[in-house]
Length: 406
Image (cartoon, rainbow, N blue to C red; front, side, top):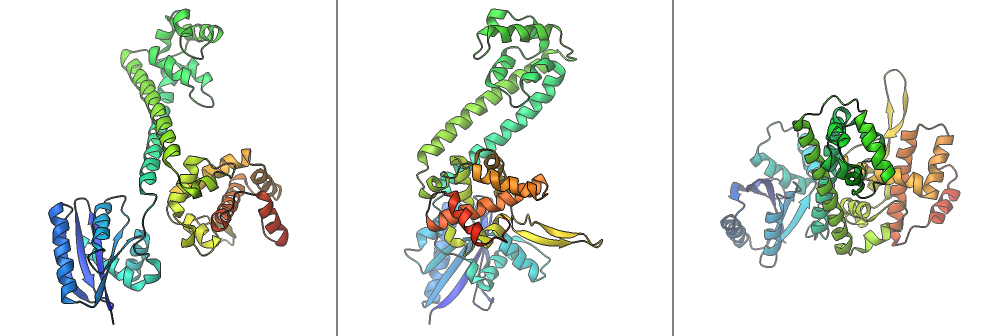
């Protein structure tokens, strides 16, 4: 009978700790540490091949926690070793390992103990571990995360720019009530303060794209009557630099988004884009989180994964009710929240659902939370049945269950 051994791996920056346990959680190979280098990988191969030679009728089940990319080198190496060794490899959720460790009341956490926690999690929860799964979204995930990081940086710079404009060129802010236009950024790159804009020639300002002669005239006249409290060179240089940096980030985001659209040939992404309110970026983001709909046996489990499932809460003063759980990572919920905000404006069916909740007296944010849950149910159905978005399907389901809150 083939015996299973469990290789727990705790990955750190530049090295990893290893331990091998048997099915009874007994230590078979004590902790050892290897560098994430060519020599370190070769040493690991020698250790594993020697171990399997000692236990010929055995299989090694190895797992690493998903730690933001530090585990990828080890995962790739172990996957390559599968052709020569009786070895299965998995990437596991660190939350599961953490909660399993807390349940055992372990207080001391070291790299060695963390490696053991990984191995014990594999033994205690084999149904939660999926071995030898290829990550088809690895490259797309990297590009998607990069675009998200660039967008975050752009928002931070825009907030800083707005605070400086209030003291250096406040009259320009009236043209930025909804968003910072392209012409505004180019204007600020040339004339960062009201003092410099007041001295500008009408013909020079008109050369900036999208600025008409009438608008240029208003900008200059407003600058001459400005109440700005700061016009020093340092402030001007900071505003100019911020404007140029934001323009560069905008160009880079557009370029990366186009590359994402052209390189992302994933059937599920194209399927999700049939839902009005989900674009390429959002569809990729959803699939990066979901990976495969087969991972979730029901829509309730998918909702729990996203942390949008309802939970009943009751306080000591007698107040009670159902609220969104918000368990797990917040990034998937942020993505779903943005999709819902767009959908209640541009998707007629979702707009109708949102209005029904408001008519029932539900607060706006609570109604938006209900819409998030509804969208996730629709997404699950689309992926499960490989079917494009059709609101009539959900209407029919609601008609069958009249007591179900839409």
